[in-house]
Image (cartoon, one colour):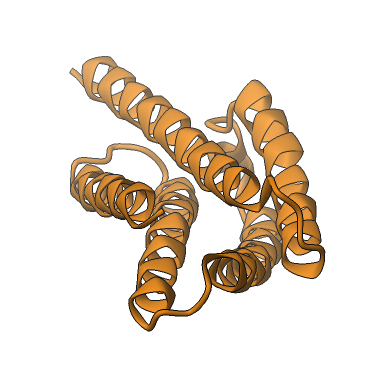
Length: 165
């Protein structure tokens, strides 16, 4: 499980680093860029920190099932805070910035987010033989969502750059 956590943490940190660079080259409404990069960083860092927390617990020689359940609880709580915060920022977006939002990506995230949260709370509350798979799948889904969001943001920035020339 430590190897899985390590790979997830490395991918998460790399994605977050590239997201920060993308924020510097933006040519879109500032509130949209702030909204997208903030959510992207949150979605990239959350799996990384959960994975590092799992590694920490396993290094303390805590039983694997307990470590996975605690990591799932941290993941579910953090993702819940992230979604609530994201909604607050979404409501503050100006009309011009909302035009840059991708409807399909929005609904993908609105499906994945609550599903991952509910599964992680379930994973934390009940001991199952699939606990590691549920945690790993949730982390991967959030990273997949981040990667898709990152790709969409890059596409928007490239299009905005060419439209302005």
